[in-house]
Image (cartoon, rainbow, N blue to C red; front, side):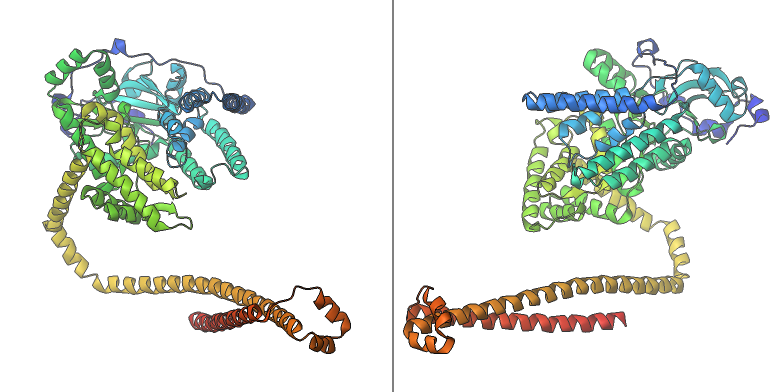
Length: 627
């Protein structure tokens, strides 16, 4: 959407309506870290993508492969050190490889934990591009000179990532300080080239059958969707508006989006003057007394903030079905009075409703200590199950869940062994031991919980996750009961009653559709069953022929041993001479072998007749289903 030059030149003070929708001044905390203490964003000229990009990626991959082989052959390979090297290499290459690394880090069910932990640290800190180029992009996108839209503009960016950078400015008309996110020049070309390289790399991995259970095709689909959303800031703006409405009920603040000044390459949002958890963690480590003074001055109780964040994420996932998928410390801001603000909604996810219901049952079973039920649901949450004994998998899952519950009760244990992230990780490791892989939906949920852990461990290290989740579920149930008994629900019920005939018709259509689907599944199953039955019957027929031949041979040997002259007269001297060279059987062992052969022949005959009968029945049922 382009800004109107005439509208932008009006310098009227914002009205009461706008002020009511912005962050209240009384919520703004005092600074914890001075602006002079913040490291500046380094600037580098933008280099258009070309063949050099391909050689950079290939060279980086070759160097990592050489290091890996050298360390492995000399038995000096260290997983953690190599994972750090991989992360730094990905950061150096930048571009879409940052996003690909973050996506791969979700596969904690397949890849080494050390590698996933390091790739999860890829927070896309990158070099900025020249301020003059930023001005050009903003003016071209808004269709007006910069000073017409903004009366203040900071030339130096306050943050930078692989996709763009953020400038601090003040809107002239609204007199509001904003964060202006600007897409880096040539980002579309860069991402397209990188995506082609990733696609070729995945093709090689599939041919070499590296991590065959990885489901590379689904991963490529996820990456293409990420590229589509990253290159259009409209997605982030839309998600931000929806999350702003939802999180207002959670008492979590989301900055306002100024749609009139936002385009696919420029996103203008309210500047959140919060103290971000990244600074909180750094000061807690370097200057604890300073942090303690700030907490008292701004009426902030870390434990209450931690509970609010944990409950909000659970509510986003289970009730709103729209959750912030990247709650790392740089995206969580602290406000006065235990209030919280969230920024950067580029990674906002939702879950298929059916899958979400299963996940909720899993969480409720964990909270109520129904470990066997949780294990059963965990199997339903898998992407695929190989041909295994599920009772054994279930037994191992129950053990893992009970072990986590025992750890969660001991608050003296380290945070990372008691967290929900630890629980989901234990479930994935247990399932991987039986070659069961998880859906991408599960991995996104796991990612959201694991990124929040970096803040919760600082805010509330002794948190009781099982008790906290049980309290959240009780609150969620109360909210649902209030919703059912509200006047609005009553009005909707009356309106729905008028649509009963239409609903009945839809139910009949759905039932008919489901019946056809079940019938097709049954036909496919019967087809497979008929093939298996026919093949087994044919094999049994061959086995029966072989058994008859073996029985005849045993009988001939027995008769020859007892009455050799009969054999000579019956088959002639040449065949008799050949039989003479075979070992002789005494009458008693021969009789036992013959009785056993006869019993086996009759058993195989009964099984073959039963298979043929079932084959005929399946054919009749298939014909009836087709009719």
